[in-house]
Length: 394
Ligand code: NI
Image (spheres, protein in one colour):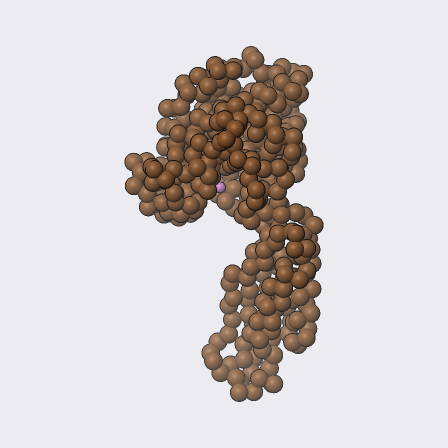
């Protein structure tokens, strides 16, 4: 399959150029008019069947191989972040307050590189390949709206692969993992309602601050006392707001938190425990409460067989010493998880850090970038995994 490597190499400059263009003109959330047009135009030029406005600004490209074969999907996210860039790259963002600080410009470019190679080897494909370009991964989430708009149907998708450029892994290496890789993310807003009074006469009011303090303390005990110590979970109250002046008993306090878990059972248990603690402590303090609980991304769970498949192909590309079994999941979230709830697949990490080149800034940092030499590796791993999958499911 050495011709694959050659083909990938042939498009390297063009793919890097696309990455730089996207980097220079970042767009955020669902507002991806320029980016999705670029993607759709390129896919059309390459002869893909293209659908636009799937999940608002999502784009889907389909290339049909053998009719009787399976359908594999690959996904890239296209969105940047609402922040200023402070790199000194030639192609740094020219859009005020917008920056590709998570590498999604690289993901989009890599998937277009995959499209270029697929267009050349179209006749060899033993099934269909669907390329999914997704908006709003950084929030509020574009995967779910794309699924609702039917991205997994016509033809029905059998499996899906995705990747994230990863600055905790060195360039030239790839990380794979079966099972949970990213956590579920839920948001909780808690209002504790008391009754105001003179600060010198606390007994005449209901102190929302004292009640909120007890609530926060007891929320901390959920992870340590209620969750199985073998499981991972996070309950963080990151914002607290309330009160007027030192001599007035506060009548309301607002708390905002993030809640994370690596499996659905723990996720559900955390929610139940939070409701229980807030209810019981408010009641014991004679306070009222209100809870708004929002379910964002589910935990991302990689399928074992699909992970092995991608791992084997990554070894072909990078050699075995450069393909790492990721031991610990991250408690960050990733909405690729929604696709994995529909079909088996795997999401892997493409190392992008390079100390020698001074590329070390973390994701969502104003200095973030990644080593562009990894782009061809990403394309090649995807192509080989696609061919392997379609061959096995012929
Ligand atoms: Ni990201």
